[in-house]
Structure formats: C-alpha cells, structure tokens
Length: 185
Image (tube, rainbow, N blue to C red; front, side, top):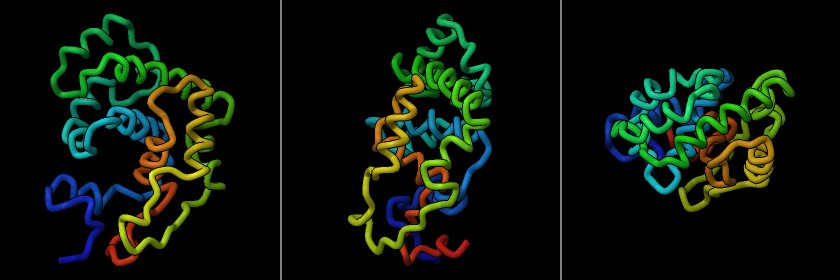
C-alpha cells in the first residue's frame, strides 16, 4: 500500500481525490472557478463534506460555467436553498454569483483567470518539502495577496486560509508530504 499524506484517511473518495487531483496544477478557467467556489463552500465544514456534494454542485451551478453562474437570478439562488445536495447557505450561494462576476472582470483585465491566479506564484508551482502535517501552513503571504486581490475584485469567501487551500487543491503549491508517493508524479 503506497504511503500517502495522512489527511485523506481511508475513505475511497478522499483517497482518489488525494491521489489524482490534489496538488495537480490546474490551468483551465472553469476548473479553477469550480475549485474556488468549492473551497469557499467548505468554509466551516470538512472538505470531504463538500467533495461528496461536488457532483450536485456541478449540476446546480451549470457545470461551473462562469458566465452562466454570473447571470443567475435571485430566484435561481433562492431555489438552491432547497437543494440538499449542496451547502444551503444563502451567503455562500449568493457569493458564487458575486465571485463569478469578479472572475469575468479578472478575465477581461488579465486575459484569463489562470493568468491572474498563477501570477501569485510566478507561473510555477511552489514545491514544499514538509515532513509532517504540523509544518504545513494554513496561509502564506501569497495566499494573503491573492485573498486581498480577489476580495478587491468582488469575490467572496476568499480569505487567506481559503485561498491557501485553493492553492493546494489547484496545484499552485505542492504540499504533499515528502514521503507521499504522489510527490514523484
């Protein structure tokens, strides 16, 4: 059995996410937007909770089509409050629309969400060499700068801790522990 980062435990969904997705560089704007929204939805919850709801999120938020989410009506937002397959938090649901509008603005100004987000790590993943989970930070200066820039653009649920978790998920940083078999992908 390969050695993994301990945070994923033994849940098959979590293990597959760890092995195949977490820390893999993402450059697709739609996928980056999805991760940003899901990390924000996770605030106050465990990631596995949101991961189990991901497919329903994809359905509810139009496959994370940025323009379609930006154009969601208040009625659509209200209807999502009855969808048990997502986190039913009015601020988080409305925040997805606000963040989509912010992303459209960032795309117009920077050419792509990818270019904007990856600029915080100079276009290259930051590879860390942690040997224990206690060494992994919850935020970094780059995450703080990203948080500030996203909030300034109008995005919500983008605090420094959420931004760092996003950076880990989208592969802007590689925080797999030194002994983890995925480090050598």
